[in-house]
Length: 310
Image (cartoon, rainbow, N blue to C red):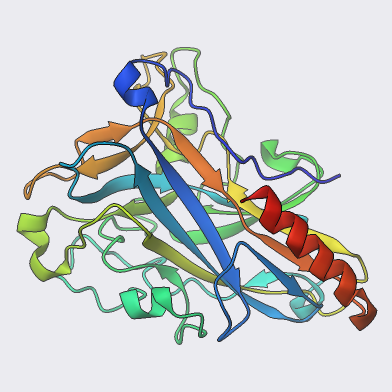
């Protein structure tokens, strides 16, 4: 059973004001063969390596937003092959580039992070993958937000949807996050599962200096690569998205306000005070056909995917 990527996440309470309804942000996935071209869909065969990245855009009328401030999200991958060992199942390249190292306590430019140049290129990232400079200023380690980890979910395990899934989050976040947390008091564990998503944040411009990145468009915050199972005989499509309920929550443990947000910076000393509540998730697909004879089927599927996202 396959669960499609949700093209739009509608946040609870997003109609709080007319101004909020007129703006949104997009979490955008792109995929590519190594040294290929970034796209929202790619054809592949068993054993292929596929690069992917995650970008964030702001859409709205405000002109005072200087840059991305703070976000959390948990990437998801449907129809993931979780059976077998080694090359007999889908796997991620290691998240060793600031996936588990502390960003905040170190002075810029945090050399362990994926560089901006590596984020734009489709070439394999040497030395592992993870958060993109400078959006790893919040530490992800066992003492705080946990080492970035891939979790596998089959048949609805740990609260996941039915099917075979992979999900990326901090090491202690084994349960799939709740889609909504409107009932109070909100359990501490449910709130922590949100905080332990991929910690995407940068310092204020005044603190970061040349390590700061401004702008609101095409902000690449994460890089990864998938090694596809070499012997899976099934025609399948891996669909990339974001776990419902994994974005930051406006309300605290005693609040029923379950609005979700990404925070943007408005001044040189701002860590992210302006919250945008509406988030669209534009996923990407890896369409896998084992036999070369399936090339025509893949081409037709990619054309349909492109039209649906047009």
